[in-house]
Length: 568
Image 1 (cartoon, rainbow, N blue to C red):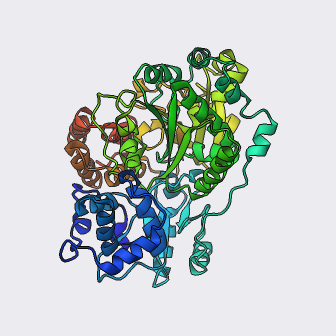
Image 2: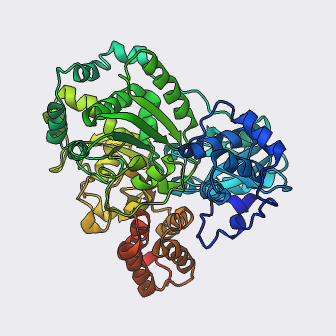
Image 3: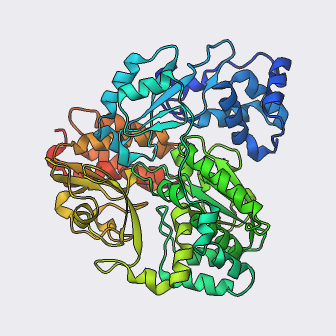
């Protein structure tokens, strides 16, 4: 199956042929044996419509793939059209559909990350070496960013991540079937409460802190959404509260932007600081149900959250609020808030048209407060220290703190908590130990794959919201990838455009066809600059969501700042 499932091929995507060509089981009745297997495997599991993706995960974990006969049986069990179950299963990259009569894939799947940071660190050579060793015991496929960019190159053996990865270590792990996620050493509930944890939540619930007081502090601090869009957090709380209930809270923990790994960093160390901020947000908007949408590439974090949410509920600290942990399935588009809501509802992650906005009509049609992990992580700190404390941070005229995910050609990559407005030169020299020996700064991505590429000569631009637009870039989730004089910005742009082509959900023509066309044009020995610019403009003007609108940014950056490198 190898390259056939290199990436999920969305329905409607020009490359979807092989997935759509799966022969359908004869007739419309489920096979009795398949029904029996399904019932044994899903015993005790909810059969609500929104559980479809969760049930697909259970089946794949049990059988190593999704057999077509089980999908038919599942459709019957959920009373859904077979087409709907098949289209959801085929939408997500981590689900492997096997037609009846077709051989199942090898017991172990090795995924080699080929996103930019890993590519710079030698992922292509690693992929070729591992592919040569693949056989009946394991297969090797390419995969998008896994959130281990600071330890590139990264490889997943089943649900076990190896980073930085060496071919021999990966082969040994695959042969030994060491595929389970390694446990994470983190601060548990007892440790967190010993340092005053959940005292703020209790003061809110007991009435000693008012909703207006908390929202006022959030607004005064200037905290903006740290998932990428940068919408003022406190204002979002007010918008949701203004809508008639019942209301919900959805947490976007699907940080799939290549180069981003800050949420993983915080959840792996201090999960309760995030959970307390989440519960305070739910209290503020009176949301009784909370949904955490966690990317499937973080099985170690899933185990942490399962353990700590159970401890939280057992201690009675959830205050009657129901916390639902939902598992993504490998789809970058689900980082877009409305696509995430669709996925939580058990559907394909297709972005919704706006308006209405999720604060008005969100999850299950209800007003929904949506935040990413880091935004909620800061709530306790800001309220306890005061709005002035947070607002007083910053450099070069900016306010607040930012968590920069730094990878690439620096000596000390990782999550760097730095003042908002720090420049790339300051970030590299003061927080990352400088450039790697023998490397000179050539270019950098200030906001991951979609944030564009800036040249070294613009090393004095403050890194923050609203400071990069004049240069054709944006900070997004603050995923900073540093490139040197030994790297090709043209190859980097090609890598990023291939990523967007693979991850386009296929819903709208400008993005679906535009990214594919751009990849072909960028492979040419000579770039047609006028055509590439015209294509980029069409994508930016007419795409439904931010994926298609931002996909041309790396390409346009290369045309604007690195004309001497453009093939001509």
